[in-house]
Length: 136
Image 1 (spheres, helix red, strand yellow):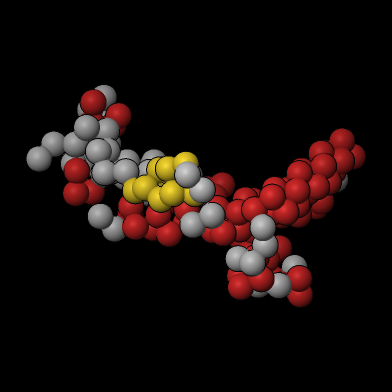
Image 2: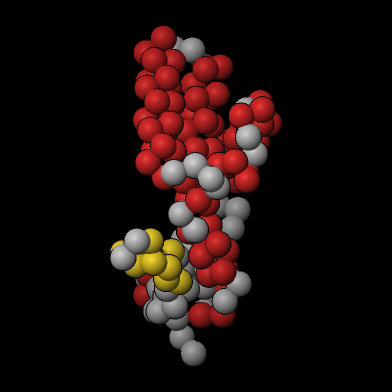
């Protein structure tokens, strides 16, 4: 069986449907309200490790620094609109850090925005869909 992903059509890095990171033709769906949600994976393993791994470390450090505000059970109880407001608030803090040229704060607030985005994705149920797509 051949894959129909973009990589395969360009004869790039796709190794075929069983291993395809895009899982073309096999979207995972979940309903959020009455809107269907589709999640697919893209990219190759390791391609962005040089930036991704240090950034993940920043995210993890910020998760631990903010754990007093609540861990995963707490963020799963947060309304999605509240989480979006937190993202906007932290984007404002990130914008100020950029304006001030404060590298430490840029790292902190960028990780906060990423963590809040992860939390939003988690509380909407999309992280489970992405994980399922990786194992099919």
